[in-house]
Image 1: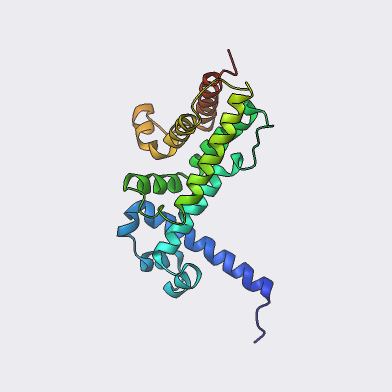
Image 2 (image 1 turned 120 degrees about the horizontal axis):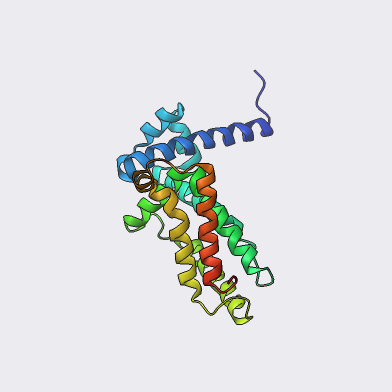
Length: 209
């Protein structure tokens, strides 16, 4: 039997990792970290439990990878923004990206929310520092816009907190939205909600009358 090439092996690995992460997302969001077993994830992914241990070493390793992917996706739209960029365009794009990711990946957003509610035990250590460093970096960026007179004199950290809360609400509290609204927001309604958040934030930092 011919051996798999390096390219084929890499493709198989990526496929299996995607299957495992998808299965893990479904299990963690339903049962939480403590209530989820590697065997349950393996059964859902239809892969041997040994495959999970091979790719992720442990349940905690798998869970941390999932959290890292969530944070990376949330931050991607704001990652390479500089003080030379237009703040209205940059912040609007960041809000839009976070809201759309939360809508398309609501389970991932809820897993992160549950982690925070439980005291973020798995965010501490290696994963905590990138999150803290990223936040400090973006606070410096926002402060630079303030210093340049591009936006109103607001507190950068509180602006980020406001954006995070507003954007993640649509995934983390979808049940409440459906209870009050009577149904899940349609694509058109969600687009209006998205623009509403953008308008409120942009006006709040002094960029629109």
